[in-house]
Length: 369
Image 1: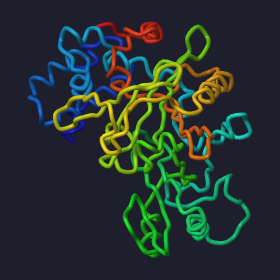
Image 2 (image 1 turned 180 degrees about the horizontal axis):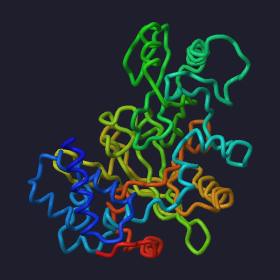
Image 3 (image 1 turned 135 degrees about the vertical axis):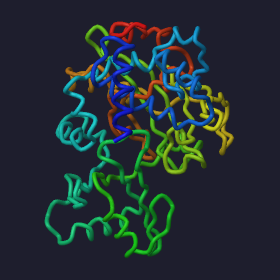
Image 4 (image 1 turned 90 degrees about the vertical axis):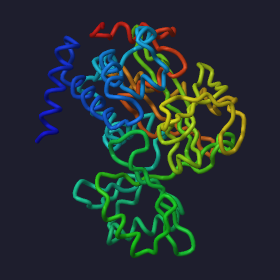
């Protein structure tokens, strides 16, 4: 009860300070601001100062902002207040299963991973379109048999981001694994029964050039596009490499490496978050493999081609954060589409308002501080 009261009071305070905020924006910013109070590295006074400027603590620290320089950056308050940029159509893309059904039979169908099973909200496992739909008996038996055949499968939340709740399922010599944890078949089945609202799909391995950085993760590419003058344009792009610290996901908030990609698919350094000291560190080689963080994403032209297809198939959309994987069999696969890319990822190299795509954001800022 006390938590609800504090949350409501904070929402009233935010709404009064930042005039004209949408309900979506108020709820989003209150949630992130309240999470900031769990951060122990800085004082309450400093947190309040940062919030007053419209930023979250992590964004402020990762970007190395001051009260003066913060005015040059897109703030969390401004960013949240733009959303949902896709309006009611966001529900088409934020749910991975809905997206799969919408794109089924389109030219983009071939770019999606194979979807084998769904675990619904009640914990029931259901066969999906890329698994033989003929009744064969117990569906969990089918899943176990498929894992034994494929050796690796991905288990991920139907709706989720930053690798939250991701499992890499493996089978090897009568033993089963979930993110490296070993189980016999009985215990493995029990673990699977505990999951709800998950998808079981093919596991994508990275292209050999990308695997040189980290072979244990897909090393996905976030390709952020927005509608400018009626056509989708690249706003930002980056590739994320897994590390020993990030384990089976590659997200930089989990310890992975983020490298910004230019319009021709090239990258030449990386960003690593030092969560303990709340700062972003520039690195020029992968922390584990020691390979120089410099190169060009394989099959980049194919990724640009998919952007053009998305433009035609989703004329209703204004803003898409598309996650791609360039696979070991020389294919481009589209993992998911996000409607709310983390703001820090857009500005750790430079303020998005100082780039040639600033107009996209400036036109949509509803709250000028």
